Structures are given as C-alpha cells and as structure tokens.
Length: 151
Image 1 (cartoon, helix red, strand yellow):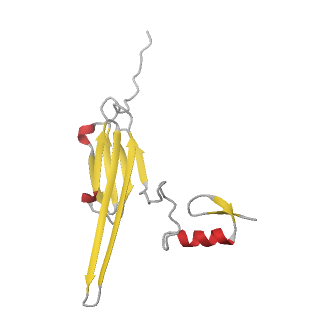
Image 2 (cartoon, helix red, strand yellow):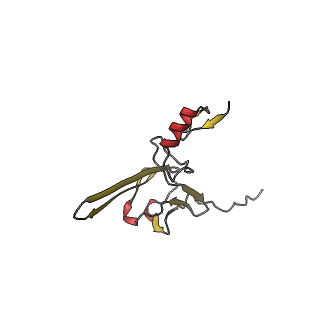
Image 3 (cartoon, helix red, strand yellow):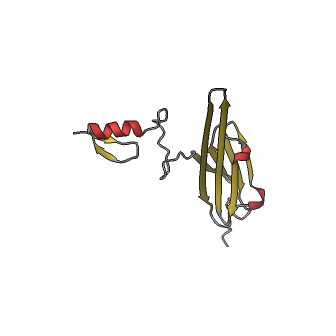
C-alpha cells in the first residue's frame, strides 16, 4: 500500500475510489498550485526584504489593475487586499451567454512597532507585481558602530 497526497493536503492510502474523487475535485488546469488558504482560494505569493533604509514587499498578482488593490496600515498591521469582479455577456438571437467570476484575497503583515515611517510608504503596480517600499524611521535605521574611548 502506498501513500498519496490528496489535493486538500491530507494523506491517505492509494485506494481507487479516493483517487477517483480527488481527480474530479481538482481544478482542471491548476494542478500544481499548492498556494491555497484554508478556504481553498489561491493566495498571491509575497516576498519581504529588509535593508538598512526600508522594507520592500512584493506581491505577485498578475492580471490585476492598480485600482483593484486596497492597502491599509492600522497600528503596526499592514493589510493588502484586492477584489475583482468580471462579467461577460454575449447575445445572439437564439441564446444569451453570461459568464462571471469573482476573485479576492487579503494578506496582513505585522510590522515591528515604532520602526516604520508611516508617512512615506510608497506603492506601485507594474508587470503583475505590487511593490511597496516601507521606509524605516530614523531611530530604527542601523547606525554605524560608535567607537568608545577607553580612559
């Protein structure tokens, strides 16, 4: 008996019935995407980098528009969210075809207290990536080591 990983992340024995159910519960063209939330919705990947001057956050969200995003900072909690609704209607004399889709996500990042210069946060969206530059406050920036003289 072998062990097989199911689409929902659970492990179970390789039984033909469960493999059949798993096969039909997968999205047809999205088999390799393992970035699911607990509600089985896809979340965008996020990269966070820190240097001496600021934090840089990148959110991979191709196909979106900059007006689809909402970015808020409440206390030290940075929240990036998006919702997008698409509707398409096609009419002919014999039929009407309507398609719609809705996608949304919400990612929250807790920043260290008293480290961020809240007034100078910048965001831009280009080539499918939302980029945030979050400058550090002067107190939080790494200072050069101070030489202490021995008396």
